[in-house]
Amino acid sequence: QLQLQESGPGLVKPSETLSLTCTVSDGSITSSSYYWAWIRQPPGKGLEWIGTIYYSGSSYYNPSLKSRVTISVDTSKNHFSLKLSSVTAADTAVYYCAKQPRISGTAYYFDYWGQGTLVTVSS
Amino acid sequence: IVLTQSPATLSLSPGDRATLSCRTSQSISSYLAWYQQKPGQAPRLLIYDASNRATGIPARFSGSGSGTDFTLTISSLEPEDFAVYYCQQRSNWPTFGGGTKVEIK
Image (tube, rainbow over all chains, first blue to last red; front, side, top):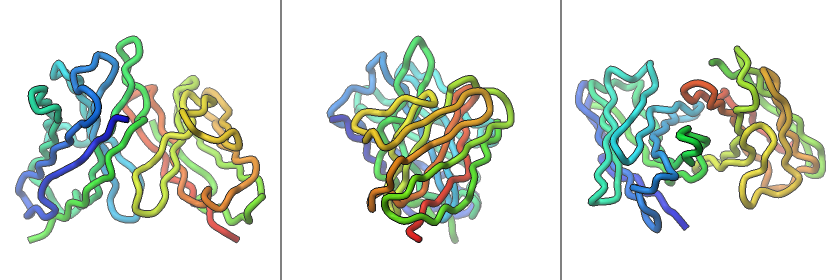
């Protein structure tokens, strides 16, 4: 069964860049049937989609974060990554990676999730 | 697209029927999903495209609605069903509702 695992620093300083990686196991990131996504959840709050990428590198982002977000894919390592620049305390959250089925070229819902990783922005 | 979930909290007993609402700021056809999240865990997909149960989801979970009004129904609450539930639309770039917490009365 496909598994997703987030990794990266748990503490980032304000104004710096948050960097996380999601490693895909028991499945191929180059499958034409999937998209790959990042979602975050501030402590005690709701869910916010950050962005989605296809293995080809085609990506789209939440308009509210687009100026600070880059999602990339490394097919040789079977993982995809998130970079969020100029972070503030408001970016403190649990960051999840997730898979979206690709049906007729459209990204569907988030059917597999990683366990999540807490990233705290603090000096 | 803004999703508004109600109520914010639902206090019920095991065996009760739970009815959760999700309203969208514009019509999204049937492009709505429901997720369950327990403390310290990632969300789990329950329902997709308004009324289709995801793989392995018990039949006590059902979804209905289209356009702007959607409902998640849990026919008889089991102890493991007490959690937070989120709706999410895929008509436009994905957005989530604020969640409904189903707690033990």
